[in-house]
Length: 163
Image (cartoon, rainbow, N blue to C red; front, side, top):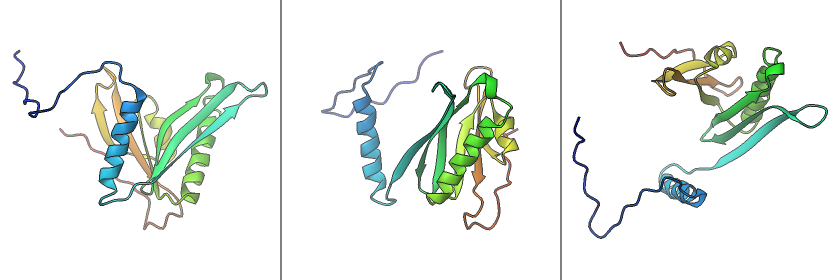
């Protein structure tokens, strides 16, 4: 298999590939993207985390997310194996949703390749899928409208994969 010819680097510019880029590069790209968005859709975000610790202070579960443009994106949820299936994950999700609604969010979205059923049980619906990420798995993208968000009704549409 031959690779397609790549577009040329613009005259007067240099392109480098860094396999271990510094955090400052990612931050700089994010700032440039946000400045571009601010030209038409002002960007403001608020990050938060919930920590569940046992009596000795060890992390037993947690959730982190970021609120922006009326949505909460949940980027990480973890519960220790001893607490799974006992309501700790549902409690973390409910607290995050409550915090987001109080912060003006109308909806939540997240992605997972191992816990689709858990999130669907909490009222989330699939709106997309990415096959083989990781290899042999499907990463699902789910969303949920928050109660009292002022929207007509909950989002019940289900993603249908292309045939």
